[in-house]
Length: 145
Length: 123
Image 1 (cartoon, chains in turn red, green):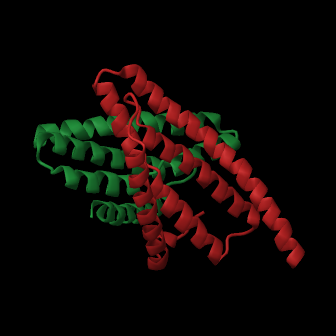
Image 2: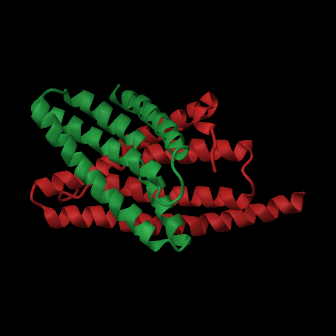
Image 3: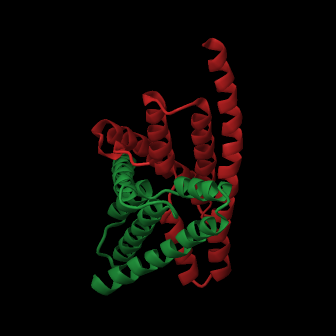
């Protein structure tokens, strides 16, 4: 599927605003949750929570029906923007590299692999929750029509 | 002030990701989530370079936070990477899911290390 949404200035602006909000919240969470015994708890929480929420968002939108203008703006603003900006792969990569370079190879491997595996699990859980939300909305919409 | 700049740069990073993602998707087909992988790898290379620049004293701590936490954080994404891996597994493409999931982790960590090394060598 080839789309040209990325060339639409209004949609790019929606993603930018969402990304600004998500990044600000991430900055706050990282400050509230400093590393514990070398484990970057803040980044871990942001990434796992963000993966869960994105799974729930995308699946509920998918189940709600074909993508119209409103659903596209929700997907891009909240998903690509807020949750994309809230989660981060660069911090994860740099933290793993630092732990590794600092000689704590077990924690580096455990943190890196653990984040990826748990991110898979939380995104899957989000999809399960989103499927229920989407199915409920579908029934409500259907009843109203 | 730092929070505001992190937020603005984070928004710029997210917008850049959206445009780069659409651009790469228009030039690749099927298989692996190449666009997200490329975004996360290049963002990790950049954050490594910034961390190296901070270590050599070429970059101020505040400028580092704004560029790394703001731009690199907003540009790269873990949530989309996880979702794309789950979607591949749902389709039964387990090998590609493994390559996307583990491959991204390994390549981003190597990219971050390369960035640190590059900054240390150049600055």
